[in-house]
Length: 242
Length: 92
Image 1 (cartoon, one colour):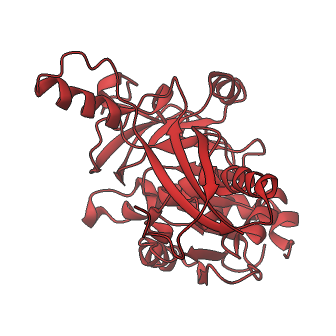
Image 2: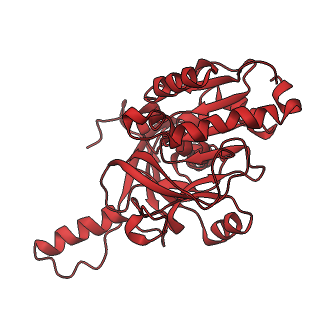
Image 3: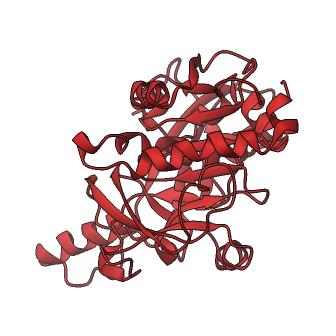
């Protein structure tokens, strides 16, 4: 790869975290571009981010309408070609609706919207987005969602576990994955998963909101910064153009 | 021909339904001790054109499969009839 990463930040009607991602992109020296949902190509992007929010008002189901947005076939092709994709919060919900990631995010078990800092245990560090973390460490990121209860059939959950695709779990401050630390009733305390190839990460927490010490933490910056080193190590992928 | 489909989307059995559980709790608080379970869902009334009943049935099934219900978590069933009104929202 030559030069700074080119990152496409998708914007749907109702997306609300795109400017936070763009701000962090500036901190990281990325060349970020907002991509409106009616665009049909991603240009020369090295990576794609689906930010949080309420795409299309979350009507019917979270992500249900967004998955049919004109930009989504390009995202699916980009992901299928091994390109790094990150979906946070509503972005995660869109990726599951699109079938790019398995499972679904249901309404929180306590029915409340939960906005707080949340400790997470890092289960795996493979792929473009987690290389800057250490397996087994405890990190802290903001969560902000009403529909974050990860659900999939038992066979799917078992497959995710067996193949090491559960990458983040809700934990207490000591990194213990206990029921009391689960903020939404997610099965197996799942907060983040990756696809089979590992290039697509979906997570309910907001890494873009933890990029400066002044706002409470920088673990999110560590996640997003992971992309730089990964792209350098993947010259063939980085040169791919869609 | 215009058809009216009342589509009922509900969480698949076995998936925790906290909204239904909360409503059931509210009913029991009101003294309806016999309430065993409440399942929540949503009702979608679709007014649409199709040539005949088999075509209308097929259209509803396809709409449910592609958008209205997510089979990972939901099931959909419906009642289909001829739409006698001219616009949705005026059904008695």
